[in-house]
Image (cartoon, rainbow, N blue to C red; front, side, top):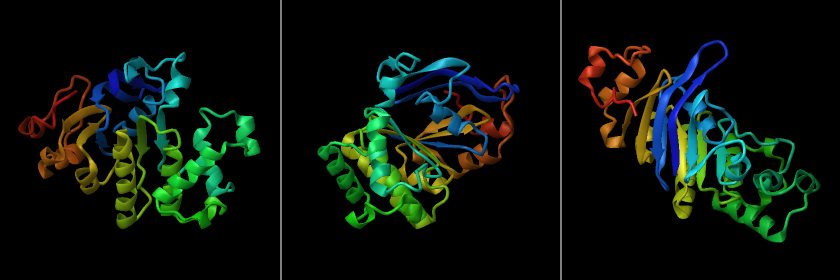
Length: 265
């Protein structure tokens, strides 16, 4: 469904955010990206919807290369859930959810609040699905709790029934119980639609609980790619506390002792 083909990203100051990353994420998979801060997780996710242009390599979504010509059409099939919710706080909850239609509705129509009845019904149904009552529809998004705001973000993401959902640290600012509730909502909504989810996290326990697959990144490279069961405590330690990678892909004896961790896609 999503293919990253030898993606490299070098920033203007020479910092290499991604180094030759190749990954295939099949349709319907919940794939979790783990790694320390600065590993390249968010940069990789942003490459999947065109928000980050790679220095070399490319992204293919369902057989279609992501290019300037195809970007607008592909963005209708790829939704994003943000760490800091990315809601318009002064706008109503209903308005924020309906903004998920912006890829297919003109800005003028959206600003005027002109949406079809079936679109409004869908927004209400999605809000109910994420546990928000009709009483929330007219409330300002900024008046909601963090967990409620992220529920609004999930409802917005699914307005166009996306084939791919990118979730960039969606529970970073939430407490453990609410984090599980939010990830359960994302996982269940995705399974209902056979949607592919690419989700970056910091919490190893949540990655093991919700991921069908875990991809570990360090210094812009993939250093682990396997199932939650294969992501043992030893490999967690290697991912977060192992030696630095250099530009020749050489590893330390610790990584050699865990060959799965040192595997580069």
